[in-house]
Amino acid sequence: MASKELAELLRELRESKGISLRGAARDLGVDASYLSKVERGDKKASPSVLDRAANYYELPREDFAMASGALPSDIVEILRSHPDLVEQLRQTYGRG
Image (cartoon, rainbow, N blue to C red; front, side, top):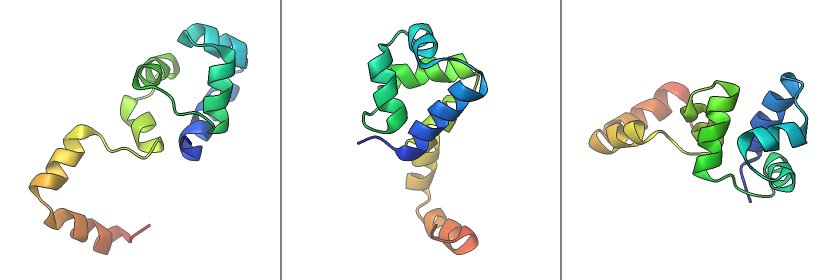
């Protein structure tokens, strides 16, 4: 199952621009039923679809990655190199 946060983000972006599901699917190069499943959180979007969505909606790719529960690779590398930062972030900002 896909991330509900990502599903909601994709649907909200599309609706805020007044684009139909079929129109967005066509512009993104995917089938409307696939996009519908992604927007409901029933299917995980492929990385290439997320890249196209980032360009289409003019948002950073990282916004989609984080909405799907992933961290940008450079942030992962920083945290791996400095594991003490993870606990520092938790103490500063809470555990969510």
